[in-house]
Image (tube, rainbow, N blue to C red):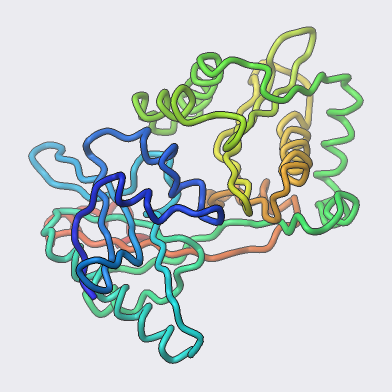
Amino acid sequence: MFLKDISIQEFSSLNNENCSVFNTLDWVSIYNENINFVGIFQDEQKLIGSFYYYKIKKFGINFIKLPPYSPNCGLRILVQANNESIINGFLKESIKLISEYFNSLNSSLTILAFPTSVIDMQPFIWNKFKVIPNYTYQLDLNKTIEELNQNFDPKNRNSIKKAIKSDLIIEINKQSKNNLFDYFKNCLTEAGANVYETELKALFLNFANDKNSFSIEAYSNNVLIGAVFCAYDSKTCYYLFGGTNKNSEIQGINNLLILKAIENAKHLGCSVFDFEGSMLVGVEKFFRGFGGKLIPYYTVNKGNLAIEIILKLKKRHLF
C-alpha cells in the first residue's frame, strides 16, 4: 500500500451513488490550484482511497489546512474484506501512511479534520500530532417529524410556534445564487467569521444546484429576513449556513427555518440531518435544542516548535 498525488479526475473516479457530497466533483471543483488530492493505492493500478487538503503560503510560512467550507479532508477508503481483524489492520495501515505523509511535507502548521466515520487516530498520536475530539449533532430522519419534534427542547418548540404565528412566508430556493452569495457573505461578516470570498462565491455559483443543495428562506412583507443553506447527498443533509436579519423583531426565525430544512431533507430521502459542527458554546446550545445525537469527529494539529509555542498561548485547547 502506498500514497501518491492524483488528479481531480482520478479523485472523482472513486465516486459512487453513496459518496459524500464533499467528495463529489461538483464540490471539489469550487477550489483553485491550492487544493491537493492524494490517492491510496493497493498496488500500482488499484486506487482504493483518497483525501484532499489545502496548501497555502502566508507570511513566508507553509500551512496545511482544510479547503474553506469543507468540514473534513474527504478521506474515504474502500475495504473489501469481511474479517474484522483484516479490516482493522487495513485501516490502521492507511491512517499510518496518511500521518507519515503529512509529516513528510514539513509544513510549519497542519490542521485537518476527518469524517465522523474515521475513529482510529492512533498513528497520528504516535507521530506526535495533537488529536482533538470535536462534536456535531445528527438527527435520525428515519423518524417521523412528530417523533423528531417530541425530542425538541420545549423552548425550541415555543420559538417555532412564535415564528409560525408571525405569518412568515417560507420559500425553498426562491433567491438567485448571486443573492444567496451576497446574503451569506454579509451574515458571515456580521458574525465576525472568516470570509473566503472566492470559494464562497464558487460554492453558490458553480456548485449549488437542485441535485445537491437547497436554501430555505423566510420573508416578512416580501422582505428576506432569514435563510439557511444545506448541501446533501444520498444519505445525509448538512446544515452549512444560516443567518437572520438582526433588525427583525420576529422571534424564532432560525428555529423555524431549520425545522423546514429538516422536513425538506426528509422529503429528499435523506436519513441523517447533520448540523455540521457544534463547538461554539452558543451554537452548541442552539443545535442541542433539536434533540440530535452528539457525534464525535477528530482533528489533528501539528506545528513547528516556534509556532506551537505561540499557539499554546492563544489556542491552548488545540496545542
